[in-house]
Length: 205
Image (cartoon, rainbow, N blue to C red; front, side, top):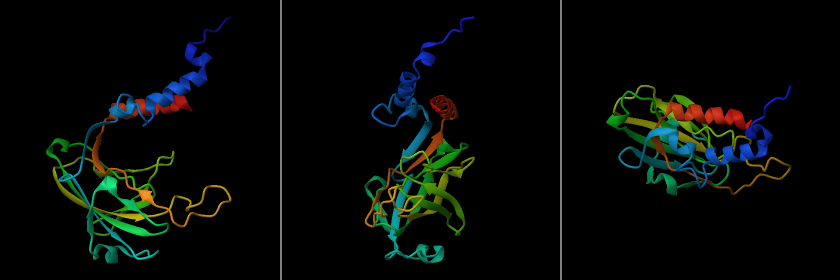
């Protein structure tokens, strides 16, 4: 008995190529599934304000020491962390808008390297893996059911990757590497958009 095979099954390479285009964050991100992932997003003052302090050399200061230092105001998309192995602390001052009230609000923070989110009273909350790889983890849930108002967090940024600073072969680590901070945003996920994205991810595999 002959089994019907669709065009998508006959040409899996073409299908996967189209999925890559529809899911990617490249030149078509404004018209593909990427544009449907968030129902709301804000950045910049007054909603997101950033200040940074860089620890000397390769010191790894305690939370108490770090928050007592003098911080300098920065713009998220214009800041670079470095060099290799250095540590930088970012004070993140958030103002959750009224339109986000009652929704799950997340912080989108991609430093291009490793990081840790802290509460203002010194409780570590979640690790962050920046960059653009498959292991990227750059969202942190600020409030599961948000109320409008101010929230302050600290992010400890470590200028190294998940497995150091090598090239994943036998090459030596890059001792003078820098990492670009992507625009920092408060976002509300669109559940149906992410459901579609994950379904397409399964098809890709």
